[in-house]
Amino acid sequence: MGIEKHPFLGKYLLNEHKVENNLKDENENCDNIFMEYLNNMALHTNPSYFIKLIQFITLFRAYVNTKENTSKANAENLPYYSNNFIKKFIVKYDYWFSKQESIELIQNFCSWLNESNYSGLKIIKISK
Image 1: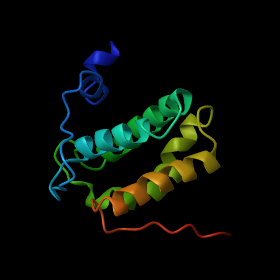
Image 2: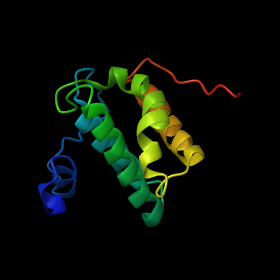
Image 3: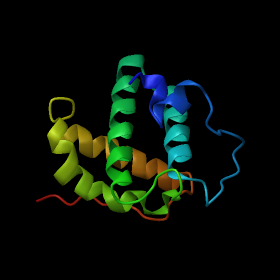
Image 4: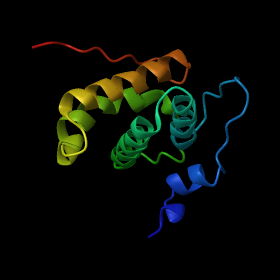
């Protein structure tokens, strides 16, 4: 399957997703929120880091899709999935992401969700 046929990345690459003005729609689906985040980060990161970010968000989306449909659900509960995503899912991809790097990436994403008013949930890092 070519990347252009991927249900999420295909839309992103073909620019078929919805990125409009600064008005936030609390019912915006997760896929559009993921794409908006990637658009925002593209302006603030170098190309090699951005590729890693695309991989990470695609994996997070895949994990969330095991729980709820990201093309229909809003983003309010996305931070809720972050802990199990790091502990149970991303470890399968440790050749791409270290645990610490995964934690930093998910913290950044969840902070962005909160600052962008897509979720009222905040994640807190607890040291052991």
